[in-house]
Image 1 (spheres, rainbow, N blue to C red):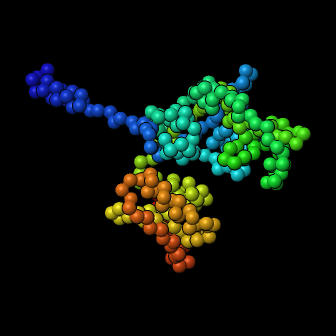
Image 2 (cartoon, rainbow, N blue to C red):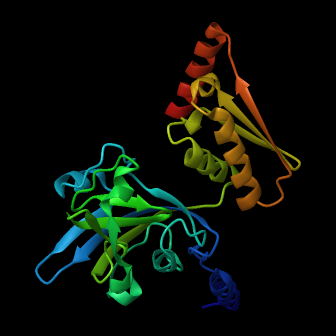
Image 3 (spheres, helix red, strand yellow):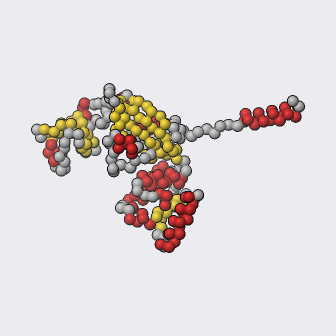
Length: 270
């Protein structure tokens, strides 16, 4: 091998040594993430699905709720929208990573506390038009409990979490770690207006002013004013450096609207 070839080979190996693999982002506190999960209650003989984001599994497990919106859930890690132990399981996970973990009662929903089982007068419920039955979830003040027994003018209510005292299994999948401003805002909009088609929402940032243009259908949403105030409040809380939020309802002339939708369809097809 000539000296020239040796130098060329040395240069190539030096360049190769300098190539650094891009570090994959992992979930951290305050991150915006989309998460799929399934929660099982573990007994001596089986695993029973209690909660899931998978619609088909919910139907198979006979826990399907037509009022529930299935699919990945939006979470801001550390905000307490989900149990603390669940959010801690997300920390350090990578995008598209799936993991399955088993948790004993003390690391999940806690052991059962028998002091939280209370004997309440039936008239307390009748005053609010409630006729309690065993198995019902009832709200008493700021607490929610499960009715255990009803009789002799008394109602036995268990204010423990329904899974207290149970070992559980979670399967968690991180579908997306959201870093883009527009995607973050769209998730905050969906949090307040779940039925909004956010693909028809236009978002732009002008210095510290965030402009949000809603399609004309937004005018028909119930309590849209309250929703907008909630969205603005969330943006100020979770997205730094935004000093003002402007909401605009765009009403497009019918012919122009058709032309605009055609252009958008062509762009999506590309």
